[in-house]
Length: 124
Image 1: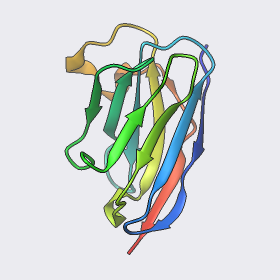
Image 2: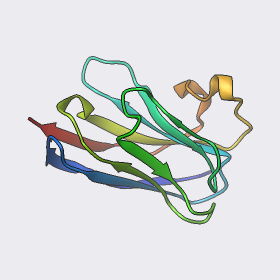
Image 3: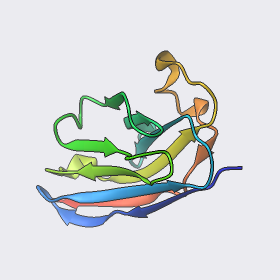
């Protein structure tokens, strides 16, 4: 069992910044951040191989969000800059402990561990 503990988030005005963190209690192969706004499907916004390496960003956050992790023992972070009202959502840390091919990294069902979710609210 792997526990994912998220922190950060909150409320900010448009143009502001927030940082989310996710600490895993055990081994993970690939991690990501998903978000879900009311009435919308859960979408992946960023992903990273545990310990660093290749990163993924959704088009909607490219240039504004940065995902990072120094090494496998440290938390994963999502630094969010130039926030927009449309970034308002519940954000979830997700992890896969098994090999996850690139073609499937965007599928929420492929992740076997999830954090409890953390609210991000951006006001205009």
